[in-house]
Amino acid sequence: MTKFSDLKLDPKVLKAIDEAGYTVPTPIQAQAIPYALEGRDVLGIAQTGTGKTASFTLPLITRLGRGRARARMPRSLVLAPTRELAAQVAENFDTYAKHTRLTKALLIGGVAFGEQDKLIDRGVDVLIATPGRLLDHFERGKLLLTGVEVMVVDEADRMLDMGFIPDIERIFGLTPFTRQTFFYSATMAPEIERITNTFLSNPARIEIARQASASETIAQELIQLQATRRDTAAKLKRETLRAVIEAEGEKLENAIIFCNRKVDVDILYKSLVKHKYDAAPIHGDLDQSVRTRTLEKFRAGDLRLLIASDVAARGLDVPSVSHVFNFDLPSHPEDYVHRIGRTGRAGRTGKAISIMVPSDQKYLDAIEALLQKTLPRVEAPELQAPVRVRHKDRPAKAETAEKVEQPAPREAAPQDSIAQDDTAQRDVAPAPAPAARAEKPRRGGQQQRNTPAREHAPRERNSNRGDNVVGMGDHVPDFLLREFRSA
Ligand code: AMP
Image (tube, rainbow, N blue to C red; front, side, top):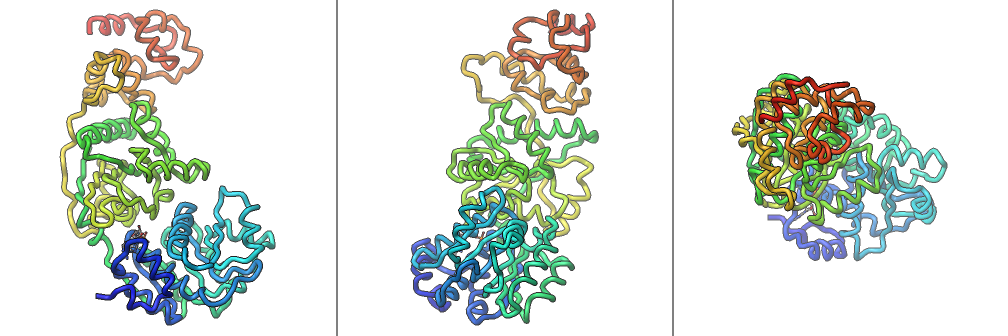
């Protein structure tokens, strides 16, 4: 077996690796580093979790150990598709380069230009950037890329998904032809193949087995729901998710919950918080400082549920994630592999639970074709109110919530906003099925607040529900009120 000491890395790098607690190189490290140190271009087909970051950072540091940075002319460039990934590479660099005097700058959106400008003006050995931000700097005349000796493109397939390929081509064109290139992608789409053919010179191609290594330690489960209508499906999925979270109980230390769309990340986040879960969202529309803070909390174990889009969570390295949920099945099957790879890391066990509705069948087919296996089907746990009583002072009300969450009225009442499945409201207020139905046409909005409807309704119900409670326009039909009271 290859040892790090066999790899001709700078002794200062070896020392840092030792201190990081790594004993043996991962397969991509063992294979890529010798080529990288020979000066060859490397094409790494590997996903996150394989140790690929170190596979380019360690030889990069070793190579840059000789020579010095010049003002405005970074000696190497690492491009990552998202701010988080760029920040993660920067953290890796800090760890492995801690015994060297190499300098770095991190150029990512959402961070003020000034500080980074100063660093670049002084000269940096490693410039880590997202493509758009790098080009902004370049266009402002703050940066020269003609001194780049090594260029790294990380997560190229994600760059493709995000529309960064033209930027990448342009950046390649701004760097010297003689540079050494490390190029990493989890998959080789035709467009990626084209780029590598154009910009890499006789690369050593290193392919690391796809999902197998990651999934061996991950128990996968699939819950198939029968909802066919979009509006009811979303609500049923949220209820199912809560039921699963409760059923997993203490085994669920923390989880990343993936949604396909940013808007759904927000909706799910609001719903979970209303239900008193410790949850926070992360997606590309959120301010960078918020994203960073959320991630730090999650990493530190101060946040239990992280609701994420693929882009924001791509490649995130949180060593200990007990569960991953696919609230939506991903439309790209590779994303399934990436997502579930957030758990079961570093030999730990993990659980990945996916929820699907009939319209997701095509996504499931693609995932199972890629994995070459059938995902184990499991029944959704019984939908019921959380066992734990969230408001110590209101134990009796939680019981009522159970009634509201019965499947029948849920299916019967088409609902399209999270407020409508808000059992947090129900937790604190008895709201049996007929009343829930009465909420259905709530689009009437604000002016309904002080209508007779509200006055007709029992006072304590309204007072606990806050201003959200509305009736059916100007009145509530008598039969609804009668039924409610008898219930
Ligand atoms: P990456 O694929 O670069 O996202 O790395 C995944 C995780 O593996 C990171 O937490 C690294 O710190 C860790 N790692 C990288 N190389 C090694 C190694 N040789 N031994 C143990 N852990 C490693």
